[in-house]
Length: 247
Length: 126
Image (cartoon, rainbow over the protein chains, first blue to last red):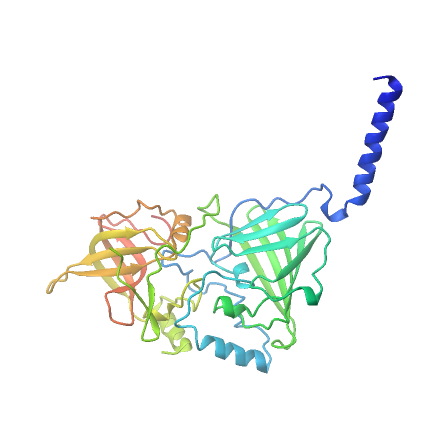
C-alpha cells in the first residue's frame, strides 16, 4: 500500500466513524452506563423461612396509602374480598418492583431488562423510541416501558398495564389508563433508590408517589428460576389447604 | 374470617404475617393467632417451588404418631437465607413453631425451626 493509499484508507475510516457517531441516537452511543450488577431485593422485604417477610414489611405498592378516589376504593374492597382462594404465577407490575422476589437490572445501551425469579420481565427501551401509538398497543401484565438516562438516573415511563390485580391479587387495582413514571438511581454500592409516580384518572384522586429502596440480596449471586414443580396448595371449602405429599 | 380481622389477629399474636405478600397464594389459610410448638422427626424435606415443605412426624404422649405438612417459602427464598437442599434431612429431629392450618388438618406455616442440639434454622441463619 502506498502512502497515498494509506492516507486515503485512514481518512475513509475516520469519515465512517464520524458518520456512525452522527447517525446513532445519543441514547445508545457507547457510553458510561451505570453498573447495577448483582441481585437485589426490596428493602425490608427479604422473605423469612415462612416465605413471608417480617412484620411491618414495607409493601408500599399494595395501595394501603394510595389516594384512591371513590371508584378506586370500591375496586380495593372488591379485589380484597376475593383473595383467599386465588393463586398467582408471579408478581406482575407494579408489585414486582416492591416484592420479596429477587430482582436483576441488566443494563445495556439499547434497553434495560428488569427480571425477577418468577420470570416477570420488563423491557425498558432506552434507544430513543416512544411508546407505540395507542392503536398499536394493548394492555399487558408488565405494560409498555420506554426509558432514558438522565446522568446516573434511569427514568422509566410505563403505560398500558393490564388491570394489575388480575395477574396477582395483591397488586393495586389500578385501571389500564394508569401512567407510571419511575426514577431509579444507585445511591450506594449496595443501594438503589426509586421514586415511582402513578397517575390514574379512573381510580386516583391525585398522583400517588411511592419511594422504594432495593438492597443487594445477601445470599444470591445469580438469579435462580424454577417452575412450580410441587404446588400443594389446594382449595378446600373456598380456602386453601396443604395437599398431602405425592408419594 | 375477613381479611382485616385476620391481619389484626396476626398482629396481636406477634406473628404478623403481612396480608397477601406471597406471589403464590394468600396466607388466609393459616391461623396467625395461634403458634404451635411441635417436636418430631423429619420424614422428608421437599426443596421445591412455589413452596418447600418439611414432612414432620410428631408422636404425642398419648395417641398415634401424626405427620404434619409444614409449608415454607420457595426454595430460592430459602437459598438467599443460606439454606441448601441438604440443610434438613430425613431422620433429623426438629422443634418447630407453626401457624396451623385453619382447617384443623395437621399442617401449617413454618415460622421457626430448631435442631435437636438447639441450633436455630430460622431467622435466616441456619
